[in-house]
View (spheres, rainbow, N blue to C red):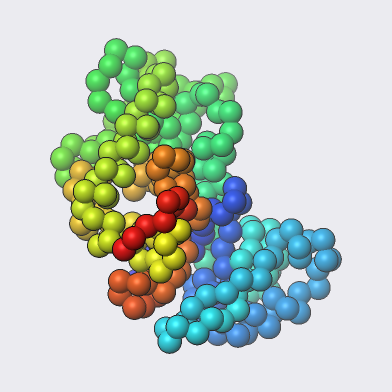
Length: 268
């Protein structure tokens, strides 16, 4: 599988910021992590820029050792990879930046005051009917929204259609999202948190989304589920971060997880 195929897992949202890590940069650009760290520590940028765009963190290697890595914003990433040259590196940089932009758009849609139809919105025909997710918007020559490409699941089949924006409504969005979020956590609890939680910390719930899709049927599209989980608040587990690599309490190896804060603590 190509490096670009892994780009989606390289970018995550943490505390309302879109970030990546030096570990993922090293993996995707096929470099030694120690060399990326050395490059980071020798960057000729201001203290203010460094504080805003780079954060020293740590990860667990395959033996369970805690080792240093850096988390970085899109601006920090661009500053770091400026010197990475070659056609392959250029393709990875372009895919990386596109993914940053997509995650930033998702973050805006979740936390901004965006009341119009937008990519990622959960919509319904004003006359009622199925629930759709907007995957693309078409504009007329004057720049006004005209049609929306929508997607939905019919059993195991992914369906697409193009509908006039004027026929779509966001009025039921909050009700739909709350129901879907309630259904998700009910399904996870019914299956058994102790079988899905990779965290060793009783106050942190760590879920691997790919594993959940393998174990639980009837879940929404991944992009739709991602948007829902980023809104998870009390009384459900509270969203903290996605695509975080942790050392699994279930599998005894590093695994990518979504992290949620729990109170009261979980008893695995």
